[in-house]
Length: 163
Image (cartoon, rainbow, N blue to C red; front, side, top):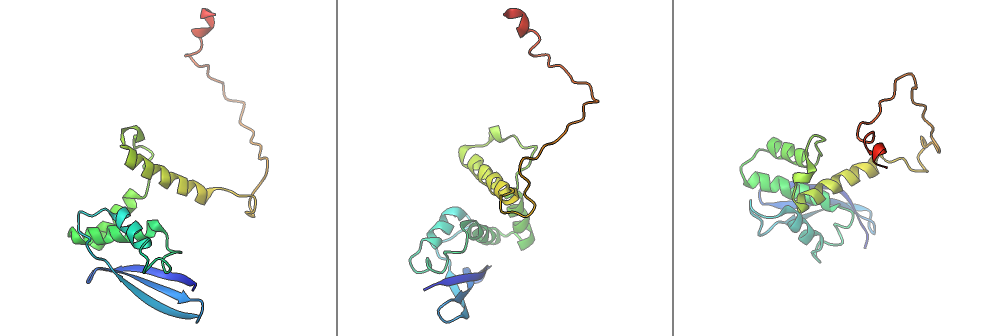
């Protein structure tokens, strides 16, 4: 059977993920409520999202729902369990999903660095111009202004004397 996800959301009381989908066989729009069990304010959102997506009961329905969207829904639930408002939870998720250009990525641990890199890769793919795009231009040449004086680099001036 083929199911096409239309909307995916979260319900806080009782904790559950709600999926509105279209059944291609009968062309009817249906709702599926997937209860969230054994999830606390200390749980790992990415692990819980993977478990739900790979659950044999829900796997067929969640094929077109991205893992990142499920992680965001679990983060909203975790924020609710920690006593945060919906606005605070959304702001925290937005902050985690963006990369600050002033942030020093050399100071991050491996897991956090991998997450930041995946965010940057996703943003790159979203903004990338492909050959099939209507505004794609092959072999773009840019003329840089030559009226500014070129600065010489001081680091290579000393190395010329050594040879």
